[in-house]
Length: 129
Image 1 (cartoon, rainbow, N blue to C red):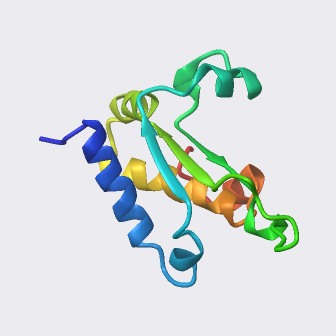
Image 2 (cartoon, rainbow, N blue to C red):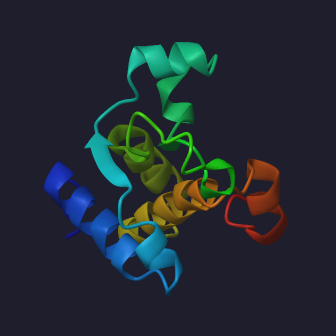
């Protein structure tokens, strides 16, 4: 049986980060991982998303390609995982392991940390097709 509780999600997400190859793993080491059941309403409002099931993860921060030592970020970079939307997608798909889906969301959000846009990611990642 697949565990779907918040602790299991955190474990899967941390395993995904730990499995990143170097130098990506060390450059992502300071990213804060936050697992919550649902996206906060202010995030949905800012992104103009009506259905919270449409958001499985989010990178919040300044991508490494835009960071400057002379202008440090006042907040740590963060990857959000939204457990209920991920679970809904997992159930709807029915053809992937939950750990693979969580890993995919983590890697997608970490790609934003490295300066990749959604279009950049989509050009090499056919996961959603």
